[in-house]
Image (cartoon, rainbow, N blue to C red; front, side, top):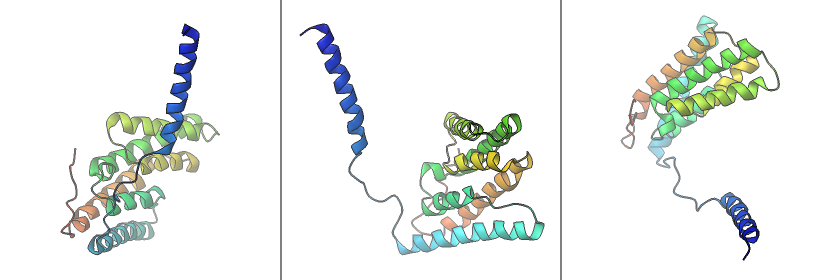
Length: 185
């Protein structure tokens, strides 16, 4: 076989391998516990955390609830054993993302590309610092879309994330099947 035929065949094989990845793998056991007590604990934790933040927002007339906290509640109370649900990831992932989002807005304003840049930078920072928390991407995106100022980093983000973790410590450990957190650092 000539060298060009070998190169073409190798390229074709690479392309085929690439598209085979789209198939995925066989589904494993569900990540979330179907045990009734854990479902009840998930509801209680999520309700208490979001209700408490909502109450603080109502009392102090300060924004304490942001949409990313809904996704954080799913992770922290519904899948507390996961690495993305641990306190370090929740608190620092949200905080770094808020910082990146605010800085991006302050430097570039709201443009078609600044939302993509700020969110992508937040993801990159979370990956580099090992603080990945998927709702952090929404935290950065929301900061840019809403034109958030520096206070957004402290409240609602840092303060709210800390409250969600504190409530998770008390509520998640009510279940005999849970031990939250798995680790702090």
